[in-house]
Image (cartoon, rainbow, N blue to C red; front, side):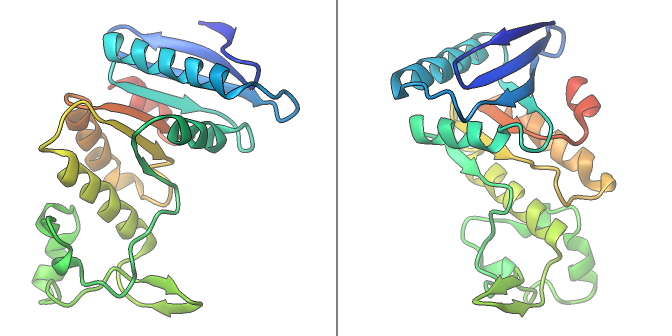
Length: 206
């Protein structure tokens, strides 16, 4: 483990778990004052992804609030073709979950509740649109819905770069194994980059 400066904007502590092949990057801080060129940022991200393709398929960035984790992901998104799921990414709240194309809601860990209540064909995504709240799935359920949607949509493909911003945020501990199981499946075929402050010890064991 050593402190490394990877560009004029990002500072990390890097720890590589060679047994689990999970790369843990600890953000020290993000410097707004230091302006690096687009070329430098692009070279940094490419070298990171190239290293990850050879050594591991899961890279986790950890850091304090305000350290620049999301800004880092935004730079990755600007520089590379990837699937980027933001922390507050959401679907249109009025859509019926059962009507989402190319998606099987029965794979959701909570869907059996709605099947028992005979609501499986009527429950909507839920959330707020134009300042109006629409009752449907809870915030944590919507988070799992989007995560599972990405899992199913990317399953037939391979060698994608999937970027996840705080995938555990708003999700209760009982659903953490569902997310980690999905991550383990996805890492077999894709390169995954995620930032989080939650369940880091669990990720280290992957």
